[in-house]
Length: 306
Ligand SMILES: [Zn+2]
Image (cartoon, rainbow, N blue to C red):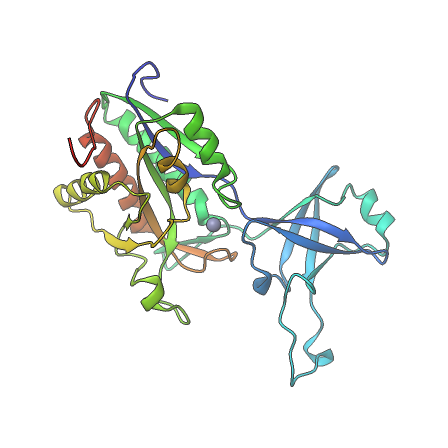
């Protein structure tokens, strides 16, 4: 929080929560069926290593899958919530419970951070830990460059974005900001099996993505575009028909309506454990948020018609 006493309040926000699974049913043979916590992808589960966050600490487990030899090659069964299961090396329900695991225990993947070709950051939950990193870097830039902002700035991480923007709703109601700049990830559409007709033509490495959507205020977008143009920051554009699916929607429709807009980081393979983002895009999102903040004035009136 910067200038906490200021009347005019600007939020920069990213969600911090990560998609995961819940233990839903433990069989008497000692296997575990799961349900989603957010948009976890059943298709990528088989053969993944996980951590079950039990009452007695983390427990390692794996998503098992029948061997190729034992499957009917002609009509293969696809992974779904009905057939994926966890094996934590136990042979009974009692043994699982002794490890501190119960119905409702949360499960995350154990995959860690790597880089590819010194160009991409790769890992799980880049959606949206990258956002948390970027707004923190904006705070660092403001401090290092000794910027005095004329308004209150709130740098916030939300929870529960992945299950319906719930944390952002709470933040918006608590802070009652005048302006909200949200950053989240969006889909790079350059890899196979993604339709550019429905998903747009977006690239990792071509810069931050500015969104057009009902929840987005065009006059705040104009500030982003001016900041990008003045500072030679590349940017791309995306349109969303009803909602952006990000915390932007929660901020925009909170209180009496909040001037909100979205700066997205292009990302490949969303909701897998190998989410990829381009290093230069990360730097450029940071710069774009920073430079945009410098253009916002105290009490700025964003109305279209005055
Ligand atoms: Zn997500």
